[in-house]
Image (cartoon, rainbow, N blue to C red; front, top):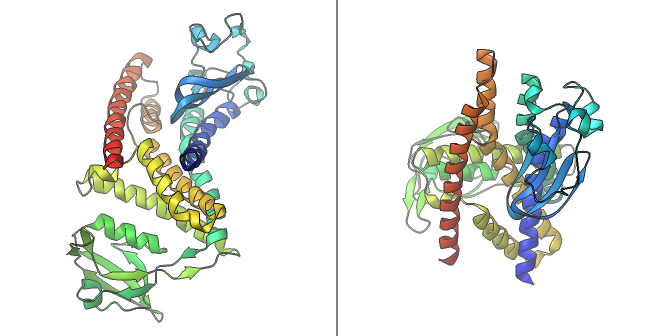
Length: 381
């Protein structure tokens, strides 16, 4: 039963982040009059699905992604030839393509849309961007729910460690940290992510004490017990209730923390200041959800659900950022080709772009296997 609950919670988080991403592509494509062949959640064999106005809505077996597939003008692909998910006797009127991008014809009737490649450049850019943007929108909505129910924590120092640089540099209990290495700090969590990704490098800390601003520079000290570098903030964060208009401010801060934390963690990995254990795939995500569920369970199902919303918020921002990276086969790579098209005044030949995305997809598949293997080893360990 416990395993079933963990699985259901994992699927809940997965559905929130993937559906929001693919729905962004889907709704903006339809609003721009582009025909959508399939709106799919998951990968692999089809579990259930139906077809309406030329679009297949499909739930697939493996919860490791999703897809919003546009009509590219290939009749076989659109009509479903060779797709064993479809009724072989069903026929689609390909000649029914009509309407202009930006009209509401495609939104009202999928059969009256245009193919993706015929849409104006700006429309295609908007369609590709919509996935990550919707991830950020949904993350903010989730943050609103979380902070309304749980409040937030500011960046006030509540305890200092003897023999560590923070206290030696003159920081005191009650100081409100405002910046770390030039980056704004609003939340207690931001203090953690900044010190974690900083490692052993000197760190500049700006703070406010009784309305007076100050600045110190500290060099983290390695702690054998925790296995990482510390500046000596033993406790930080003062509870802030968010039952009024402050909910919007702190929801924004929470999403900003997720955004900055993801970005800094990514930069740390690229700079060699991380390890393979700092990366996780679906297996690692499922394990993290199970751990959080076990920790929150004694406080009741509502607390468990709020924690799941918080995880979904973090992962939704994470997915949005990763999809904006200029890598082949993902949204960021597609955007790069669209920007190049805008600069040169004509699109890259489809066959050449297809090869780039195919190679990129293969490399991403290899990376996914490596990450999953490491997740499994960590789980067994």
